[in-house]
Amino acid sequence: MSDLDRIWNEAEAQLAEALPEAKRIYIDMIEYKGEKDGSIVLAFPSDFYKNNAEKNCRSEIENTISVIAGHHIDTIFITDENSTRKKEHKAKPRTQSKSKTENASRNTTLNKIYSFDNFISGDNSSFAFNAARVIAQNPGTSYNPCLIYGGVGLGKTHLLQSIGNYIDEHNPKMKIIYVTAENFTNEFINSLLTDKASAFKIKYRSVDVLLIDDIHFLQKKNQIQEELFHTFNELYDNHKQIVLTCDRPITELTDITDRLKTRFRKGLNVDLQPPAYETRMAIAIQKCRERNYKLDNNVLEFICQSIDTNIRDLEGALTTLSSFSELVGKPITLDIAKEHLKNFIVEPAIKNNDISIDMIIRKTASYFNIKEYDIKGKSRNKNIILARHISIYLSSKLTSYSLSEIGKMMNGKDHTTIMHSVDRIKSLIDTDESVRNAVNSIESSLME
Image (cartoon, rainbow, N blue to C red; front, side, top):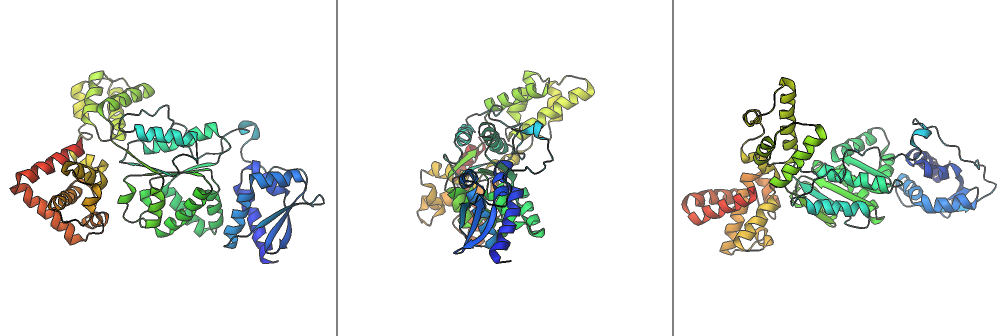
């Protein structure tokens, strides 16, 4: 058996397993005819099958062959009416009955509870919401790639899956994969352990829409970053839609390779902020209707005034009070709400999860009327140096980053320099009223 014989046999097996039935019919029709000038020759029993295979699955066939070979190999499609392959397609047995899902979605990774219709958009999320809708209506053509970032519980997963569900409903032939970065990593590791790395590559490089949640999980994982880099390039070059989510701006991921960061930044980057009071009230009312929670309006107002961190905390408070009411058979009063929500209404430190270094730099630059890039730069202007010190101090105080991580995001400043800035502002706060007022004003604007 020649090397190309082996490559085709392996490719045929992988394609038969990975492709949807609508495309697998063409694989079943192929008869391998050997090689010609280094290309693989594939025969079809009629022009009908050859022409449709050219149109519908040539790219998957060539990609699979090239992945297995480790380099690009051309394919030649021919018609051979004497082909020994059966002229009638015989569908492979499926675990699911055909009558049940003839037109059912193949995109089983999507959770159908998420949709644009049940996402309440406010000033904090209108940009991200509208961008997500445009992406869903025009996958692969508008805002590609797209990165949605923000703190926990602000709706990133909701928007990501809403994109997938909308496309699945309106373009059911599109292959969509939603996956968390953690599951993507685990699946990749398992593919290496089971010698199915090629099948993994085919699965993710043959999709029409790739949705990856929580890419900050990929930090310090160099091999999976390498795999994602090549998957990204393959999909982007073929105008396939890529949408990612992250808990912070891409510039603040300290252990992601620069070339991957560059690709994430080349499209649209939008942030989700904590919702305003009015939006929180609208969300709370909707959740109560959906789950049949019986909570008085004054209790809802208290909850929404007290919990301004994220939607997940808001939902947790509603569930806690409703469960208590149901279990003890008593309506929730304002006093009961205050007593049972002590664990939700905590010190402002929890809010810091939603504050990024980019936000701090933006607010500080605005306060001092300077450019954001000046703060990260090397200017020795006195005003800019003070703004830089304050940005570093607030990053140390309001985020969970270490001093070394803050240094990396401040144009590679070392640990000693960062420590000096923090100590300098601490000292000035005690002795200089103008600095103290500046720090307090910027910090207050971040907490709004």
